[in-house]
Length: 344
Ligand code: NCD
Picture 1: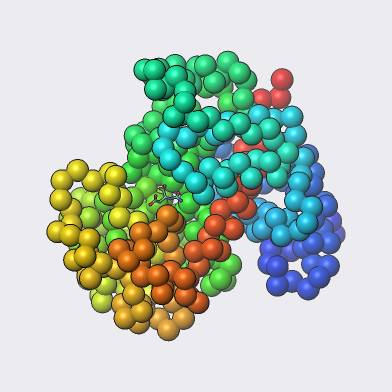
Picture 2: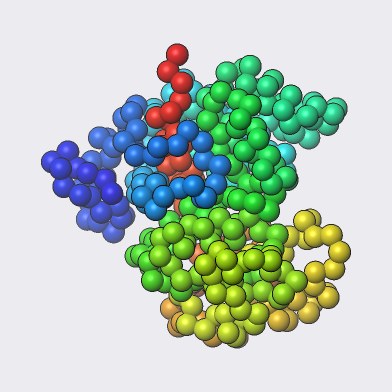
């Protein structure tokens, strides 16, 4: 929650009358000092964050949404700082989102194209980390296909590290942007019923979302065939359902997951057609949820597999809002870490 110069609490909502949060904006995100209370040097996962850390990031992201909707979007919190985006896996929206977020805060952003790098010549992750570290970046954003790789890299460098997705482990900024989208459309997270459906077993998005949404008091369900449920999932504090009819009943939010075909070895589903028939979200299955239920998907979508085009492009879809919130959440994360960047 932001505080006005007069000490009042400001609702971080663009529905405020003109002169609301915008009137105070120059005193907030334009400063070269961040006001976010975030006691961590890296963001490696949702695991390890307290509910208050998450709420602080979401409140700051609300301000970043207002800022991003202005004509002049640039602030100076990261002026003179260097951000490297190191993506070992293909990505469009996440990489573009981190790049825009860094630039809006004034950082110099470099995208490392791993396809053309020394990694292809056999360099190890640790060698890459040491080489980049010697260039004295302030923040490295890393996506890697192995779970745990980002944590390992963070121990080898002297700058802040943000996990942009490691294997099937965590994708913390995706969970934060999903939470921001839910909070802004439903007004809260606590007490909502949220059904996370599909390829839970291979999904870092599901893992981070379960950790975040349960920490903020949502009732979380996972819905999938047994082959796509990881063992021990019930120990994460979720209800487990194997049919869309049961899992979507009275849900406020239906969060679909992409079938992670690239992470599957062996047959997890008999055929894509059969999977779409039983688990693909169409208007019929969506009618099991509450009449005002909203639909989310982290993208990229497999149209006609886990989600029908009519639903993905329909009035209850939040997919475009999620993309917009992605930039804002990443601005909030970069700003929060700016407290901990080296001073000399
Ligand atoms: C997700 C990812 O890469 O983990 N996508 C994203 O970040 N936009 C989800 C996915 O690929 O299914």
